[in-house]
Length: 355
Image (cartoon, rainbow, N blue to C red; front, side):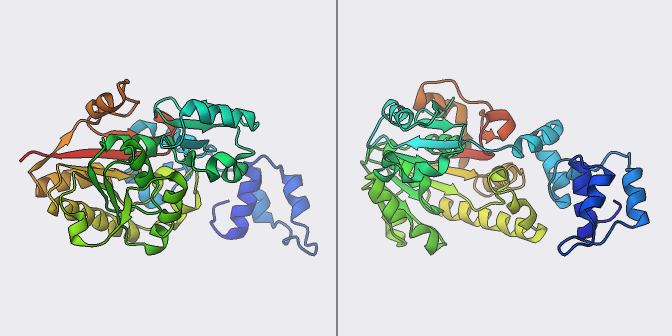
């Protein structure tokens, strides 16, 4: 339509969805709720649509300012990844091994009329692809009694890469509502301590009820320096653009601004440096972002500032923890995308202290 005003966008979207000129004119009829009739210029545009190839940001339906960064991050797979991001996400569940086994929950869900399957990589994950009844899961007995939590498979994989062991002290530095803290408590068999912190007190306030439902008794909310000292590991699940979760929250891509993206990178660096000041044996850096500027770039900058740390290969950790082949996208770091792994977009790097 050679215009981005709202009227032109509506006309163009109708044409893109297959409406012909007569169908569009029938809608633009000046009725009580109908817009004014098409003018001659608009009819001409519809009669001779533009033939040149749209720019990548139009084809991929993402903000124009992200085109260079997404090309750098996703390369030749960019458009395929964006098409995958436009699909409907499945409902992924994490079985709470403090209360149940995956077999138990699969059987329970099938008895309830759902069609669940084991996730391909996360050993405690369940996927429900036919999710028209997914809203009923949050009212099911299994959820209310804490036998499973809602968590994308990529986030489950990230929690496993923390390699949390019973008896350890883990600091979850940006815990949010506590999804990964709950996963860590289960991996630790409720033995040890998990300190949950977050700058957003409202989100963190959800954790107590969730932990009680899950039977996770080792999670504490403590902001004191003493509580964070001598941690065996620090999880930095950093605030980010959320670009890996666009298929769940597509509006977020249009709310992101260049200024906010720069601000987020500053926060990510600050959280990593805060973790390093505690000198833990390992730091797990994670984001739900597709962007290298929030992922590899932040890790490279951290290693330059803190040469006492080095990347510990994620694939090696995965084999040690699960005794299974690593998922796609896992080598020195773990990079997940909807196209490659069938999950949300995610990034994990494990940083091990050398001395």
